[in-house]
Image: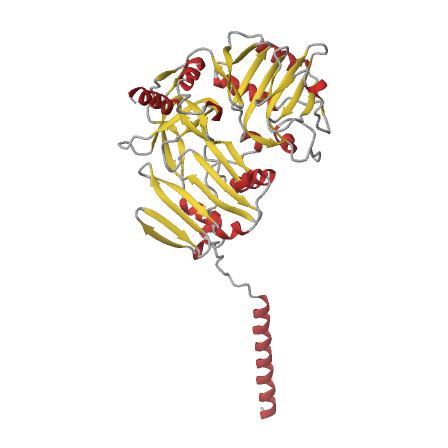
Length: 460
């Protein structure tokens, strides 16, 4: 075979081999092992639930005014059921404007200085009193009202009045605030709703009678008889600090951790997070983002919307929290833990284990405080002991006897609730003791705080 033929054959083989390699490279699909996303992208849920605005607001008082007779439902469970039912009543009309026409308003409620809006004793009315002023523009998120897109400016409400109109078997509804002379009016054209309210107004079996007491700028209704409530002992379950790190820091992998005096501190150079031990095996969290403080304050609507969205995003409603306070001047919203429909107070404990507090600025969350535990479905003890609480008259007389030590005008509300007690010898247990609580100088105090003051007054 000639040399040229051999070269041609070798060249052909090389070209063919090259083509095969090229084809193999084109068609080759490497079996790369899929990279799992970083853990912090997965761990952003706190094992709570998501909630809507209507689930986060509960009245301080639900009062049934049968002319000059005042009552409330004896059982809290009945009150809760009635309130949930009320939220679903369909409004047939809602006025597109506010009114300050006294000739119209005074058929149902009256303005009394300095108390604000109060029930007219000539009518049959259900009064719903909320702990905070709520923007009226949000009523479509709470009630069965077709008002989305309608705006009433900066108007708010902290009271609702459901008035029975006997002439046409309808229910007139008034949204009012003790901070404003204008009100919003609507109507429920439902004989079933009318009869439901009328039945409760005329009921004696389900009700306890109440008396109105005036404390400076506030009219407070209290029951005429003693109240029996059970004690509870609840176990707690810890919540993950790692989850909150992933929620609160943009890049958790850059966060550095430091231990100091039993507290743990986390920072990425800008944001700061700290935890301190509580209940022996649980923790309490505080977070601050200084950069957010450089921007302006948020409106009440924005505070509520941002807070709910933020907490829903990491399912942070780990207990039955309700809105307890909103302060525009601080862009602050505070939620309080409830149990069996009653608020839990811990005025003698620092930090607060029953509150979740958020501060917002126009560009995001500035500060967060909350417990890193949730109550368990398991009770520490299956036996419930009941405590008898004094009547409203006894509460009022106790406070009156302290008129030289306290200013009755500064009492804002008196409410039944649970006082949180912690036993140092038992870990992860919340003791809930029934007690009257008084909101004085914008802070909640148990009645025992005032009775102790009264005893010391006698000693002095």
